[in-house]
Image (cartoon, rainbow, N blue to C red):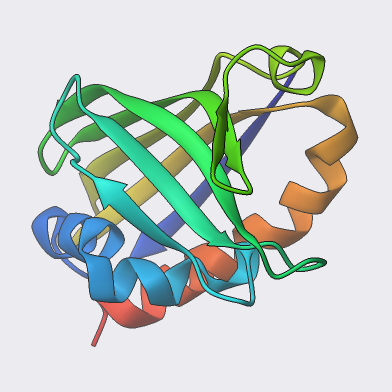
Length: 151
């Protein structure tokens, strides 16, 4: 498992950046670099809750995604998402060899007031074979988050 780290400074208060990141309409916009077909979620951002990140598979068009749990939620300061499985063709998978390669994996967001705005730090665990793919996706996603938050 590899750890990736990204930071971006956004000229907006942490509460606005937080809301832009996690509210449905803007979540769908800033996450487009991860899935051009669109990404959404079902479930809750409340600590301990299950949340599913879903979208069409770029190759097959079938719906799939990640099954996760909110490990920690400190509003406007820190969100930790624990990825525990995947859904493919409507079937939940927590035990296949493919899933066991990368679970559990964490995606952590830290929001820090700095220089009149908010510094967003992202720390994410990825399987080594997906490192380059995610390295190409995160910077444009965070840039889109910045644009949306600064409106």
